[in-house]
Amino acid sequence: MEYIILIVALVGIVFGADFLVAGSVSVARKFKVSDFVIGAAIVGVGTSMPEFVVSFLGAINGNADVAIGNVVGSNIFNVLGILGLTAIFFPVAIDRKNMKFEIPLCIAVSVVLTALALNFFNGSPASISRLDGILLLAFFAGFMWYSFARDRKQAAQNAEVAEEKSPIWLALVKILGGLALLITSCDFFVDNAVLVAKSFGVNDAFISLTLIACGTSLPELAASIAAAVKKNTDMALGNIVGSNIFNITLILGLSSQVMPLTSSGITYIDYLVMIGAAVFPLLLGLRGKVGRFGGLVMLACFVAYNWYLIETQNL
Image (cartoon, rainbow, N blue to C red; front, top):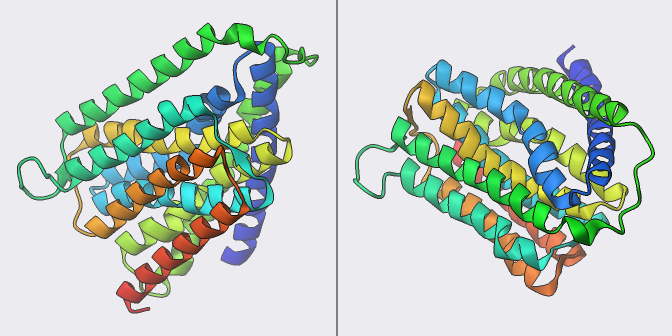
């Protein structure tokens, strides 16, 4: 029965992503907002809702391995898995503006999370305190403010964008309906994937870094591929970068306010892989795009990381 639910949930995720991206494109054209900002703000936040639910519930239940592992694993999968797979079929252009702010910020918050989680500053047991969470939330507020402020200044450059014909209410219905379908389908997928995994006797840290992380990132995967198919690779990149920033700043920032997140199952190797994944788009962006070769390299790194996790679990 679990396998049937997994298949149905996957179908729901695909259709939900298509509605979400279609509605977001309509809103972007209606208000002359760039595809990247729409991808980072609307699509990025929306597709990060499953991670938020899982990490927040993990914090409430006192399971920091799930709360932190879900975010770390999702960020790794978003870049190495989703961006890599998308680039293989649809080379993703990287704008110089994104090279100067959004991508470096994604790297910066990944480094900050690692420093806070491993307590490089005071050497105490690894944890993310409430004060640490407030710092992460400040990063989130700054990112949102700057993204929209900069986009308003560049609105005149979007004058050539074709006028959107469909009414705004229809676009909002698509966005909200797509999000609802994505989150509901993802919830069913994750619940049943965990049931299957636990039947094989694996621990919470492994499940959160792999199955839960990949499962809650399925909306990002579906939304990025749907955006790329519609020739909106800027939105695909914005979705991934925005989701990673939100996962760290908003999700862990809020989760740590419930209770300090002390994790022993997430190792420095996992954090270093997350940082390395965040650096990939910056390095590949020096050529102006993430092409098929870059996508293959990222996918190979993702496979190698998961092989390492499996080996260390002795499965």
